[in-house]
Length: 356
Image 1 (spheres, rainbow, N blue to C red):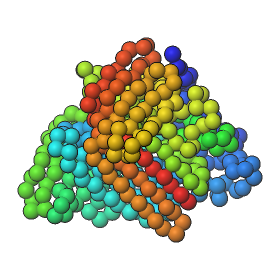
Image 2 (spheres, rainbow, N blue to C red):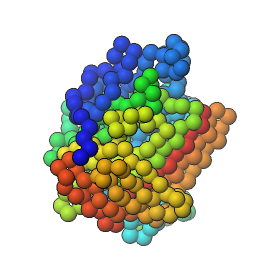
Image 3 (tube, rainbow, N blue to C red):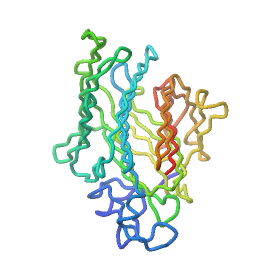
Image 4 (cartoon, rainbow, N blue to C red):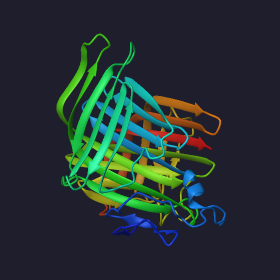
């Protein structure tokens, strides 16, 4: 059975100009990868220039009440953007709220002990913060709707010390050993509230003091001029167990994918590293996706229910993103060989392409 070594993290991810690769069960001081020596073609370019090729993103997936949602924050140096997408699992209704944040050099924080990411755009407030000393991961947003979309207010928090919570960190080549991609995962059960209000002030839906699940993914990478990727993310409860997983394949994947990749599943606080996967959708994004590996640990089918697309075209940036809500069926294996059988389990598929 596939296994990837999990070890304690170094204090700094870049040491003597070289990344420290691996999968870690503790956290470094910061999610900071600048300072790599000659990351492009072996040419010693000053780090003040190469750091502009570093892109960051933070994605918080939550399963709360009748809704599956995603908060996506993109730190592209040139054009920063945030997006909140909600999908009603019962009615198949979707709501999307986009925020263009302009030029901000430090939108997504690097510190791991405690930090906060805030967007204070008019009518679009987002706050995502963590404090390991206070044992807390909190999320809050308040967005104003219109005649088609309701206004939404959500506040939730989880504890890192919960028995079902888990964190891990990985640093992999991207795709060569000269460059790197660093990712942080944090899964916690959450307690919170959410209100959806119509334009006339009437309450559409309310979920006071509900329990749910949240899965945070934060990444920093040295990007190529054209970067693309696909991933499947899900979190929730299955047969009394609290689970979350993320499976991905990107153009930044390491050449040696068996030794370095980001795939993992969390079950009641235990982490199982998963092998590299192939994600295919032969009949288009709106039809079934197949996610499989060669180790027989991953055999899943994702059935799309609702699709969201967005395109950004500027002088120095072209990007296409797809967020697809749907259900997952199939089997995952944990490190002990136990089967995790999924049936109509809600999840989110994403596809992205960024051209600089």
